[in-house]
Structures are given as structure tokens and as C-alpha cells.
Length: 248
Image 1 (cartoon, one colour):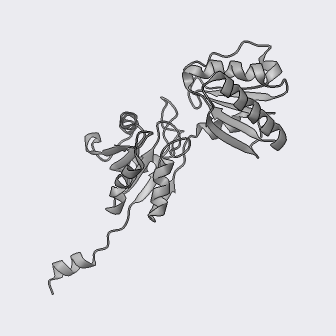
Image 2 (cartoon, one colour; image 1 turned 30 degrees about the horizontal axis):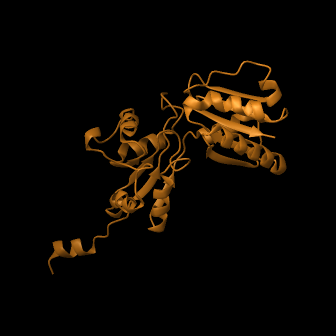
Image 3 (tube, one colour; image 1 turned 180 degrees about the horizontal axis):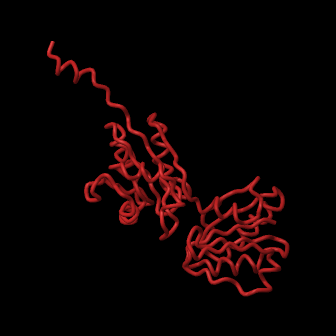
């Protein structure tokens, strides 16, 4: 028997792993935001799936990568990705190569299209390894002073004012009945309007938290009742990443 052929025939390719790698929420040093093992993992990977390749490269530039940036394979997964294209994104795993999944900011697969890739990885039997890093949703909840025992994240509320007001009233009612903290976000250029809407229709005792620029030097986390918000100038949060929370 040819030894080289026998070796090749008995070689088993170990499946790769899908690492879920958080990234900073804005321009800030990685030290203190990402643990050493997360940065080390991201530094050694040669295959990534990202919501945006350009921002992914900007993140990878901040790492002492083991591979030249131009040789790193970065594939995009966003709202334009068709479901039929998902299997191809996992091709490196089938070849025994690890993949890093990263978001635009914060934790991948949380308020992020990456969850569809994670679901497919599970369906195909690959190991999925979530890693530690900043989550704007959890940081806002932690810093709000509102209930962390029962909460719900709703993503973006309706953009049209009438529908948005109806949704906020529904969330406030649910919060009162279920003692639940409601968490949501807004497109940054509509942040000011969102806060004005909240303070105009919520009842006086409803607590509203505004968590802006989390983990950045300009971070602000402020919680007041609706009545208290109406007594003071509203903060300027236009075009600044912000998480909103309310508890009736």
C-alpha cells in the first residue's frame, strides 16, 4: 500500500467554528472593551462575515493581525443578502477553517442580520462560539436603573408619527401590566423627535431613560420620569447612537 495515499485517505478534516466577535460601539481603544482572548481570536482568523466589509476592515486594522489585511477574506451579510446565498458564507467552515462573524457595532446576531447565519451554522452542526464584548442594549439596561428582571427589546419603532405614537402607548400599557422594561432604538437623525414624542404622550410617572454614545468619552445615561423630563431642556442627541428605555 502506498503510505502517502493511505495517509491522505485517513485524513479527517475537522470542521471549523463560527466565532461571534463583538466590536466597539464607536471610535475608542480596544483595551478595556474587548478581552485579550477575543482580540487574539480575531487576530488569527482569516475568514470573516460582516454586515459591512469597509467597517470590518477598519476594525481589523486596529488589531495586530497575523495575516495581511488584503489577504483576509471578508464576505458581507446584510439586509440585501438573499437566503439562498447564506450556505456559501459558511463554505470555510466546511473546509475546516474558522470564521469570525462581526457586526457594524456591538454584538453580532443581536439586532443584526447575522442571526440567520448562526441559525444555519447550528442546522449544519457547526460549533458556534459567542465571545464577550460590548452590547449597547445590555449596557443601557444596566445603567438605566429600570427593571432588569423583565425586559423586551423591540428594535426600531415605526417611522410615521401616528404609528409611532400608537406603538409607544402600547409599550407603555404592556410595561405597566407586566412590569416590563421596554427597550428600543431609532435612526440617529430621528433621535430628537423620538424623545419629544416620548415626553409628549407618556404618562407623568413613566420612567424614560436615554443612553447615548455608550462606552465613548461622550457617554450620557439619563433617567427621569416623563414629568421630570418636561421640566428640563431635552439633551441634544441628534445623530448620536442612542438606546431608549421606558418603564411605566
